[in-house]
Length: 207
Image (spheres, rainbow, N blue to C red):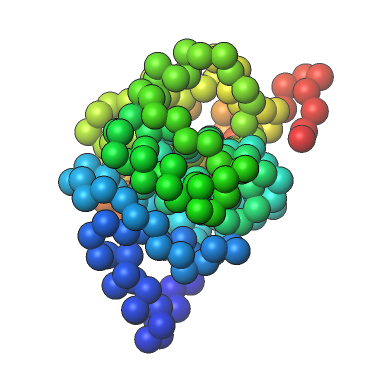
């Protein structure tokens, strides 16, 4: 629910100021994070983040999270603010990665790791399983299908993992690997956002 009051209006103005995004919940609620002024950096809107983290509320505390194509870090740092135990943020842009390192050092030096790397190349490295993965690639780059397939085939997903997918609304739900289940879906303007589940396989245990 969007609360329309004077304080909320001021906070929205802060987020729209170039060079910053704002954490909207958890222990660092209201903290502004500096980001480079890049036309292709597109932070997930406040309203969408609020909905997403309501969906993730039962699973976020103590979780291991991967923010692939981290960009501004709005998703990964929000997860850390709300109680994720470990957050890895992967970003290819040097300046954006440096801003993420500064934010991580200030907020969660032991719980956040920033990796400057091409996301798909990084997914070819030795895997470690994550409970929650955020996949929000640049809309025009056409990287969504390759990313979700690499997550599934590369061993990056813990049993029962939750995978958030953000894509242009006009394209519908991104193609899901075999076995994944679409759990929730929404739309905010030109943004389509979706939460998929990777069900437990036989013999697997939930974290």
